[in-house]
Amino acid sequence: DTEVTQTPKHLVMGMTNKKSLKCEQHMGHRAMYWYKQKAKKPPELMFVYSYEKLSINESVPSRFSPECPNSSLLNLHLHALQPEDSALYLCASSHPKSGTGYSNQPQHFGDGTRLSIL
Amino acid sequence: GQQLNQSPQSMFIQEGEDVSMNCTSSSIFNTWLWYKQEPGEGPVLLIALYKAGELTSNGRLTAQFGITRKDSFLNISASIPSDVGIYFCAGQKGYGNKLVFGAGTILRVKS
Image (cartoon, rainbow over the protein chains, first blue to last red):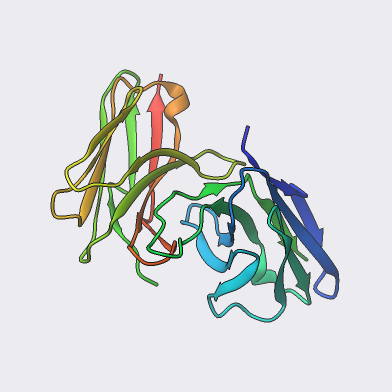
């Protein structure tokens, strides 16, 4: 069983809907990530939060809005999505970059939310 | 964005055979990771490598961090049907935690 929990597992929404994806981890990790993955392709980084602050936004369209309410939770708010946004959305967590150097601790992934846009 | 060169793209092997796949890069990485992804699941970490030349095993899996820090390989010995999935290599540079992924190797096993 994965230690990163994502809900819901599946989501179907229309282009005018607003929905949210949720991610939770209890490993004490202070870095959390959102990835988008198309079938048989590697994950593509979207956002990185480090110590609950947004540290990387990979030029993601504003119809995707991340939120990190506390060190265990990560949300991705969705609004006015396009059909090409249909994909598997993965959350991951790790120990973050340390203050005095870099952290090379590996990222641990959840099982994702399969999102379909009608 | 940048990707690692992962090969082969896919493999269809007989149960019991050994498997080898590798990743190469034109730039140096300080960490190499190998993940496996099965249908309907997220990537699962198999092996993490942190030092050039390091050779690490996890059951039937063995991975090595290349001495130049620009490549890594993963070997699976005596393959079994549950080895089926997509294997991704990922490299991590020294500053921050951004992963660079290979395109993946699709493994199918005939029993």
